[in-house]
Image (cartoon, helix red, strand yellow):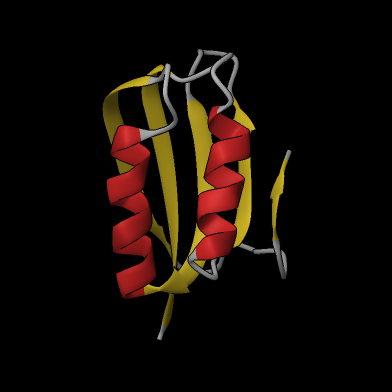
Length: 90
């Protein structure tokens, strides 16, 4: 069963290729959604997929690409958020 999850990743996550690496990780796990930089320096991710894939994805988000330092991830389960058929960078 697919779930939709919003992640807000905080720390040193902009300017280190976080969005590009996130897209690649999401596609490898068969997730749909998007990733974008936020004006407060965080990165927001909306992802839809199997619960196990989302769990592995969240584990990766804590690591991020080299050069990133994640200090916090806020997780929200979404009910009816529109999600694209692929995963892209906003």
